[in-house]
Every structure is written in structure tokens, then in C-alpha cells.
Length: 381
Image 1 (cartoon, rainbow, N blue to C red):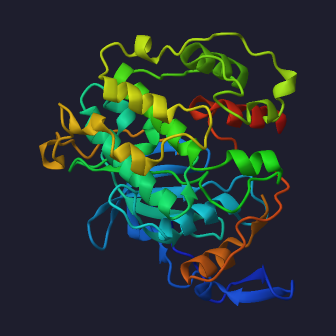
Image 2: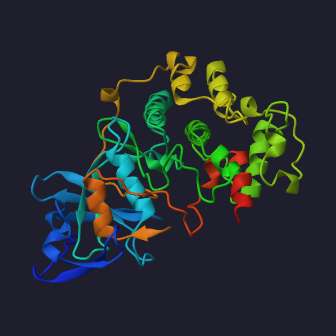
């Protein structure tokens, strides 16, 4: 499948934008709109490999360098005023990251209209969702924790850590991808309530990392709830009923007075993972601490004895290689002018990415949330 976009036509055509400073319309010749952004027609789309809430992903070839890349088209269908804030956040956060276990944003390119924005990222041959039976788990988990440790040191919370957002290169390197829901610490989620500000911490990512470890060990989702209530019950069945003794702020959780949680006094992790070593059991228990303040950090996880026992995490060069033609099924507010916002972002100028949003905040997938986040999600409805 070869797809190309035609280059913007007339250089004399003008487009109206609105000034951030004065609020007045400004006419700008089209050849000046996109600044240093390349045109997407310079990329040959080879095949479509994924689609999600925030965009469509293609495997593409840069016709100037012959490099195979991932080309993510930002989803704009429902945006009347330009590029969504979530897209700008993703660009800015990825621009600020430089780590072997974080997917690399190479550049932003544009199509024939102001609403046609693409992210050019390094292409990874596999996602872990398709490789659960073929990989060495300690090796994968150490890379995930290294990536999360880097993000959390930069005060970035990913908020959508799951197996299908972990990509694998043909050299055996794991990349954390899809930053559409990511946030910086210090910017409470909308609506701005104390409950939301307390629950959206790096602990969200660490709970999700525990779910990933469990999924890799079981070769199936650990807590596959289809709703917040079902998810809470699955968590209690696995870990026992929380209380103020193990979680001092439990009785102050949002909406907790509206629920009667089932009584289940036992932690069943050992039963769920009977062949997992004692150090592996301790790691999972540390990741699944009900109290986010006591939950393991990524740096603490990297020091776990689980990664020092056999089988030791292998050298990336010993990982199997993969063909570069798989079908990746990567699940991939207030708005402002797409062009002016992109120009500001690429120039390193400040953009307000955390306005008082009129729309409900983007939901975090419930299968990777703890009880406090699930209750908070219910309260926001």
C-alpha cells in the first residue's frame, strides 16, 4: 500500500490564524505556515499498523534517507479549533525525553491542511502483546523499570503503561510508547480536586508495571475487569480487602462511603503465582501495595533480588530478531491553532498545556488502575 499526500498548492494562498497575544485574526501565506516542518509527502506509507484513541500509526519510509519509521497521524476529526492539547503534550513530553527505553520522537511533519499533523518516531518491530510466549521476563521488566525510572526522575507520569504500549526493536530493546495520556507532576488532573491531585502520582505507573509483570508470567491479563466495579472486586479477590491499618487514608478515599466492599482477608498472590520465587513474590507485593505512598518505585524495583537470580536478565544481543513487517496493533480540551502551537513547541517556546479543560479528562484504562484511582474515576462521572 503506497499512500502519498499532495504538497500544499499555491504559495500565494493565505490562511487566517488568531494571535495568542491580541486575539485578532492574522493572514499568513501558506508557505510560511509550517516553519521548518517537513512535508509528509516525503514519506512513503508502507502499511497501516495500528489505530487508537489519539491517532493512526503507519509504517513508512523516509524517501530522503530510506529509513523505516513509524508515522503517527494525530487524530483531529472532532477538533474544531485546531490541534488537541493531548497531542501537544505528547510532542513536548517526547521532545524532552532521551533514553534507550523511551520511544524516540524524530520530528513533526505536516500534510496538506492545518489539521494534518504527523509524528515521526523510531519504528519498533514488535509489541510485547504478540510475544508473551517468547521472551525472557526479567530482561523485559528491567527495561520497563529503567524507562519508568527515567520518566519519574523527569517528573513525568505515563498513565497508560500496558503491554501493548511496550515496543520491542529487532535489537532487543524495549521502548515505552504512546504518551497521549502522559502528564507532568505538579499539574493536577482536571477537574482540580484534592482527590485527583493525590491519586495521580508515579504510583499509577508502578501499579500498572505490576500488572504487566503478572501478565507476562501468566501469559494473559492479570486483572481483566470490564468495569471499575468489576475491577475493584478482582483486586480484592487477589490482594484482600483494604483497611485503614494497611492504608491509613483508605476511609477518606473519594466515593468510598457509597460502596460496601466484599470481605476477603487473604492475599492470594502466592496462590496465583505458585512457581514464582520468593523474591519475585516480594516484588509483586511491593508493586501492589494499596497505599501509593508505600508502593515500590522504579529505582527500588531495579534493586530487587528477583533480577539477580536465575534466569538472569539476558544480554539484548541474545534476544531473537524479528522481521520488519508485522502488523502492530498498538493502541495508540481546549484547543489552539495547530500550526501556531506546533511552531511554539518545536521552537521551545512555552505553551499552556494544562488549561481549565471543558471536556472530561481522558480516562486511564481501568485494567491497570488501583482502587483509589478506580474510585476517583467513578466519582468524576
